[in-house]
Length: 420
Image 1 (cartoon, rainbow, N blue to C red):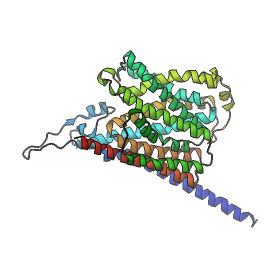
Image 2 (spheres, one colour):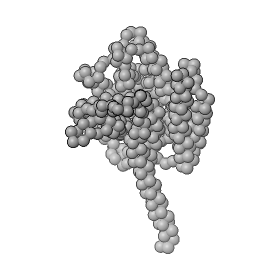
Image 3 (cartoon, rainbow, N blue to C red):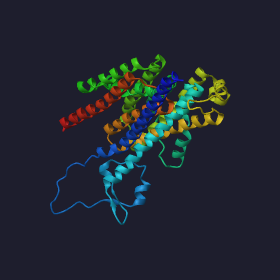
Image 4 (cartoon, rainbow, N blue to C red):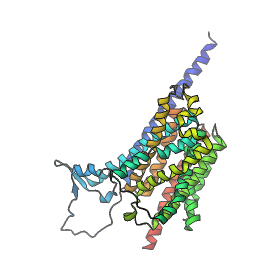
């Protein structure tokens, strides 16, 4: 049939284009992950210059492989890491630090991808964002308790006034988490992360409003392409909906004010007494947010959501097919709920390890690359489509956040030099 030939050729051509695009996206995804893992090497900060004696060389500080491995999950800045003496050869300190830090970034991305995929699968199947929010903060509690019970991590030691002052930060963490999950469930995962990329912009503004300390006007000027990119991408988003947009903004506001308040609250705390390092602060936020979220799950999704296998949405999901054609079963739902909560806890843990090992600017760059990874992952795994306008706007927004971070760091360093 001659008339059917053009249609067949068009169909084959479209399949080849789609296949080629997916291959390109996979290359971009792998490239972004590799870039994130090697980027810390460029962030090595040299120790302050000290007068050197021409007749003497500083003694090389080394450590055994056993010590290095035992302290692998104890992050250090580059200048504080020691070389590793393997007997036959010595691994330079900078390479030892780079290997450790690249592992932190790799784990951060690894668990983040698992979290986003499992989280989206659960949201698509159950459509219970409040339950999903509770899962994110509650599933990691046994892990937190185990770390404290075994002494692997010191327990936080807060006074009653410190505890009370920390409550608003906990509530903001819970609000940011819920807003994020509603946004992730309401539309395309990739576009939700584009909206979430505005969080540093909110943090910059709220930091000035709350603390009264404003940054250089050039820093705020870099936020214009961020907001413009999000607006342009929103206008071109194929499945734009206001619920996703508003929920993502609520999440941005909650997490940005939480970041400002947590710094203020802990500024006067003696961390050697309170044991409030990054992972412990996050653990406190998780415990408090679990308590704060439970009443809202009950109010918005009913008591059965606290026992999800009894909820009508759970029963309705059984037997359906997911985006990839896999059958949704009880084990499918249990697996994705538990995996999303555990991965949420672990990716934040890895993020804090990375933050303790590098400068905030390097961590911010890594966070922006993470957004790219998630956007590309959502297109590959969930087949979510982005038109040209949405892709351009998303790229401008994510790139704008990166420029904001670089400009902020530049003027912060200028201010520090001016004080000396």
